[in-house]
Image 1 (cartoon, rainbow, N blue to C red):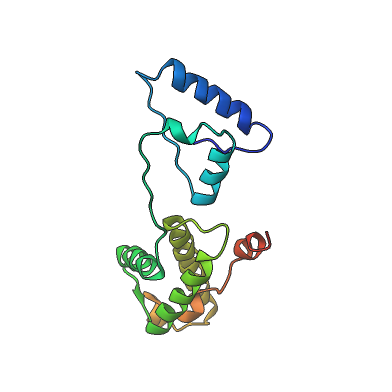
Image 2 (cartoon, rainbow, N blue to C red):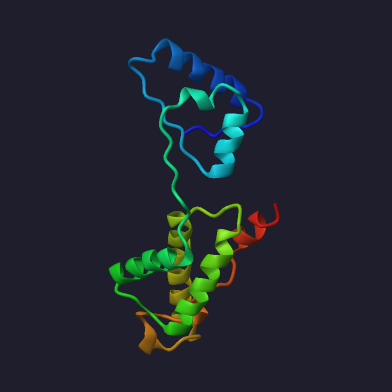
Length: 154
């Protein structure tokens, strides 16, 4: 995967286009990315879009799909999710979809990892009862991480 920036993007794209033309019978090029970044990429060269024969579009996960992913991760680690925690997670998933740093499954994984870390911290400090050692509580879920706060400022 290549990250295109304003400095080197046009030069890299010119090299790729040259290779696409010179090796068109023996080379496959796949560009993949989020919608806005792909729009930017295709805007860099007016003839780029017409050089591709196939397009695949994938919608972002909704909060229910994100909850399914989170639940599977929790199940794999033998955790259950308290109903109050589930409500808080759903709100957090909706909020995260609005962030420029939203990354579908990766976002869910990061929330899960942060939640488990918070859970163990809350257990160790007595914020939650030891009887709930495999139960994710609402207290384990932070509204927003430092990283989310930073990226939402862009």
